[in-house]
Image 1 (spheres, rainbow, N blue to C red):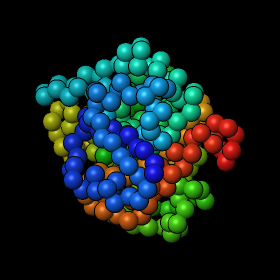
Image 2 (cartoon, rainbow, N blue to C red; image 1 turned 90 degrees about the horizontal axis):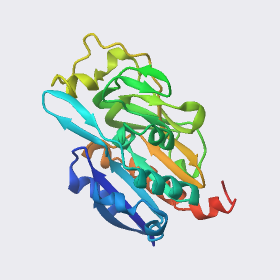
Image 3 (spheres, rainbow, N blue to C red; image 1 turned 180 degrees about the vertical axis):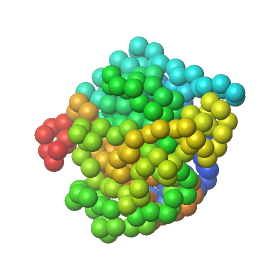
Image 4 (spheres, rainbow, N blue to C red; image 1 turned 90 degrees about the vertical axis):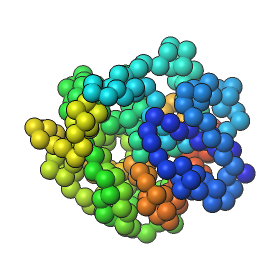
Length: 266
């Protein structure tokens, strides 16, 4: 039985259908902890209880009505403990909006392999436009690598889900999944228009470059294994059998972090 820590909060979601993913998952016992209480568990000692962490959270952002959100940097103790945990070796599965977490801590984007930007800003020494979103997109997910995370999946499968026009560090990750959707400005809406200006479904005056169609990858961080899956916005996505298989596979693979640290099946 794998022990999984499931971390949420920072972004709204429908709890019952989301948690049903894990209730229905054989061989998994999961514990749910919300932010910010979960931060106390991101250290080497506490992590010994869990085989993998599944992060569906969005820490470090305080939304404010009528104003741009406030971005909060984690304290130095948390940073030190989290980075030490990565170096010691552990398993992480990041889902959907988790890629927007800790926006004031650039190293966190490096851990995941990309970032969703709620506001324009600098990332890795370059100015970046705020990211884009589009709800309920019917698209096809294409498997682009044979890997334990994609085991048992067909070469392509349909999903209806929210997609992101976001920053992906493609040269630092191992690609697993791509979408056949067109990741261009005209197909997305500005995140800043929503959180700063209160304008949903707006891209007037928003200038964003074409983006990556990569929607799933793995990454090595120190001795740790991590997986990012871009899907997972709503019950339609939660109920998708292929998406559920991806999460189960990702947990299995990430949970083998101890073998990875020993140099086996890297």
